[in-house]
Image 1: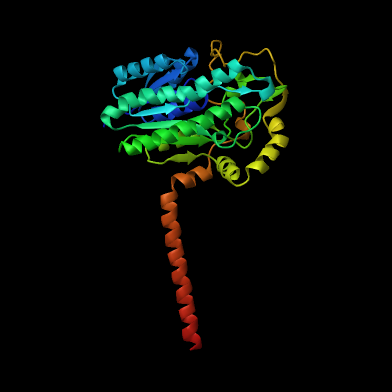
Image 2: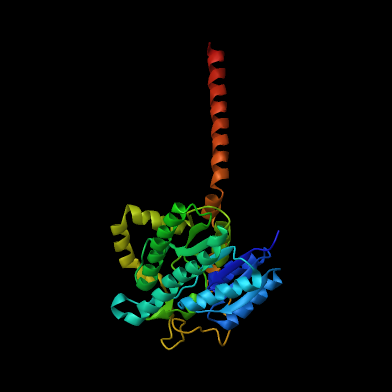
Length: 339
């Protein structure tokens, strides 16, 4: 069996890098797209140490032509693309009243249009073969927005709408291409070191926090199963379901708590570099994890149950059958004793 060819955007650090390594340890051929060359080179070395193959392709996903060129280079090196994972993102921590038009534009171009451009490049190559998988990395914030991240939340909402439209078209065309979204919880990634922020204190993921490897395992699973959406972590399920049931209640709750929960107690440096316009890894490799290892979960029991729901249903059915038989036998025995 030939090695799987995978493209991962936003692969230089954080969740994207964890995803790339998850495929790499399964001997995949991974094309790594991001702007930061140092992070890409380090990710490539990690993948190859795990037994996979890597191709470094410095790319700004906000540039459709650059994404198309990267896709062409990936196929030229590794052959037909089996899996395309759209993960790249940027965000701005800021009240809406302090946001700049160009910041909304940039966040939208990377986080939303980067997914569109990646999907178009993947479809161009997968449709002629009528095979392949496209995985959109979503978020609980794609359904339940929070304060201070309006640009990011809006972009993630847009990805849901775009993906749903495309899914309908693939069904109409009877296509065998798989399309899925994996919605993430708060994750311990380096983005909180480099995100553009106007907050007085250092930004943090809203607890509870998960290690990026939890999300990476979910993405790998989604790439090989025909599931519409995958929710990672109980907080993601709670946010999405809660927003359907009581959105107004959540609006007021987040209005009271959402500012404090996204900041640590440490003051932030307003002059520190951020990655909205340029990569920030020229001086160091940021790696996969952020600074929250001591608070982050390395597994999700909800995710395990979700990915094994078929087996769980069978097991519950068997258990119910056994329990029913025991109760029936017990009642029968009681009748015979008292008959």
